Length: 439
Ligand code: 2HG
Ligand code: ZN
Image (cartoon, rainbow, N blue to C red; front, side, top):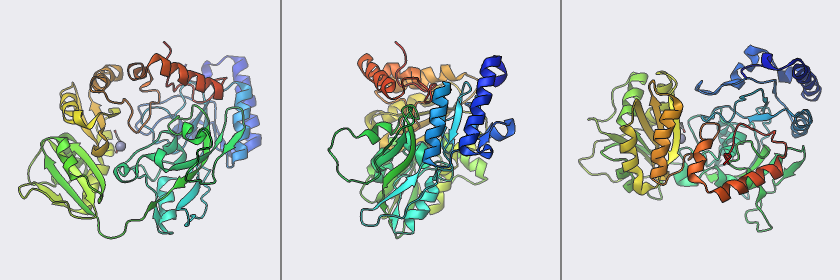
């Protein structure tokens, strides 16, 4: 089914009634239905994932979120919760008419609790806005990524986003002390007190981290903050023959450790209209950021310049000028990294590999005529062979569900299904995303 026109008359009348009820809750200007108004919500950033929606709803308060969820549940209409829509696995766009619950208006940003080094933020606050806010109080947010100006707190929690600071601060899960979540039945659970250590039963909040909108709607978060590191930061780009060579640079002063293949550096340099920053060409490059200049081999081909970040951060954008790449965000054990990257680069098509070296997190982008499923079988097959994960920091979305067959056991999948059913018995929350493919 590709659009509302394929619904029968009764379904269309029900959709119309639901839209009117939603408008009563959030106001008619916050229910979007016109094609040009919903366009930015129904297709992802890359253009790879797209669907249609009965309506985009933009609630401004938690109570409105509760009411929207309850109305959709009563109407039996599924919901896709959306933040900045920067996801890359099709998990934040509607596929078959789901209502898009956009949380961008939930921009609550409490004063920083300087005693505990914590803050409470609404799901719609962007990473950049949060960072600017907490920096004014001498703190930093531990997660940072290239899409910081659009990616939201809610979306990054729902996908357990990683980014460039995991080596120093851990992933998003590590920053979350508690959440406020609207459940599928319209009730709210709230853990925003910021208790640093709590052994009173299940940590329910953590269940929602990485759940991609399938278990509840995250509306606010209590977040742990990182210290704001002042002083100079040295950024070095180093040519290497294998990515793992960069692992020798790890240390307490390192705040980022990234790698990219030559194909990535070449395409970014061309896109930015710059020369290659290193003296020579190398199979791979490592970008390290540290508060102390790393000790390098005197023969190393290395450049030191803070502006080198541009070459790393512009990779996604540069690739998208060449077409719509098949994207695979995967992770492999560090001991298998070189072998995996070498094998993946030999696959058909133009292969670009880059990522977050310290975690073995590789972003494999493939351009070429081969269809997604065929390339997925090849790339994810290699990941499984090397004992890795098919989703390191972007989530599963609709892109990788079936691959969980290879990385989870039947018992695990059965337990996941029971949790999903307990929290969302009608299956209205992001139904296109599944972590437990049917046997
Ligand atoms: C990054 O690390 C993002 O830059 C995007 O996770 C990865 O475009 C991609 O494949
Ligand atoms: Zn990444």
